[in-house]
Image (cartoon, rainbow, N blue to C red; front, side, top):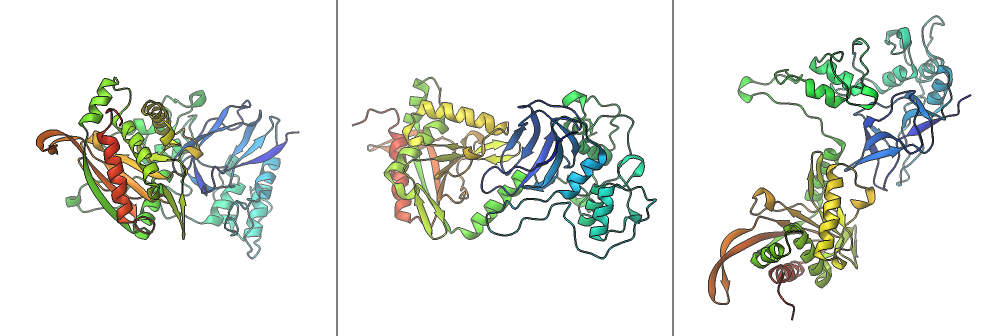
Length: 460
């Protein structure tokens, strides 16, 4: 007899409240070994590879790829490797109670299988319905006569009843979607959904997923460019558009930056600095480090000189840090990620370059650890590589400041009474006025300018 247990949405970090199933790496009932990657789960800013803690198999996969689930929600039923009957699996699903993972004292959202008090309903004994689905329907007062079963031969399953309890979703991409079975194509649920929406036949596709499974990427690659997207009608003069649902990361970015701009009193201090010596020092070192690496080093040293900016703001408290943990903006396909160079004040430029190369590579691959993007005492955002000359950045709470850096451009400067044309970088410092005064911001930029402009020069 198999030992069954629920596989739930894990929690990585104190701020995580939900996650998105990016991809199931193993098929239902396919055995896997301890240490195997069994799922990819996307949180606010990273994709986590979930490894199996022991040998086993998923005898029932409940969660759908692309859907968002709260921490602690039931994702699948896990077996130690033995066989299990449908009744045993349904019993695990029906009896699942989501644990309270909140830190606010508020009760967690009820699990999908939680009974909802309602008048009982009569269910004919002859109806094709699983025992777990019958119990959930009776407890929730669901009229199953109008339900279309998704089980074998149209049998109504517990998931059909749970979906009815949740009600129909308003968006086209949320909730049940009738999909006609297409031959014997081995495809993920999201691949079938996309194939249905875009009119792509799955039978003719070559799957690139595990064991040849057709993934959503395979379907999207086969979508004809001229296939219209199912969107509300718009006047012809406005042209066409594509409806792109926000990813979990993009929604988090939108929420955090909206809150930052609305609740933090930003003020901006700007300055231009000569960059000829920095660029010369980088060239002499063989360009092993990027301009950004030199700027991280300079920021870290300036923060040690002006600790008033090396802070986080938590309500009515200011947390001032002993070391400069600098969050550096990295653009990825999923959105902006800010991995942290911890203790940058104790690192050389070469060490920072090696650390940033590793962080940036794993950020773009979605393989950063939660602790590598949490916290930070200061942020740096550099758009110089895109030719941007100057911009203002939004503070990344709970940090107190962020530096925006533009491209180096030839400009005239006063060099000891003589006018010279040298590469100049424009800096814009955004500060939280609740915790940082203008004088402190000015002192920081002055210290930063000294570090940048004396790069490669002998120290006194």
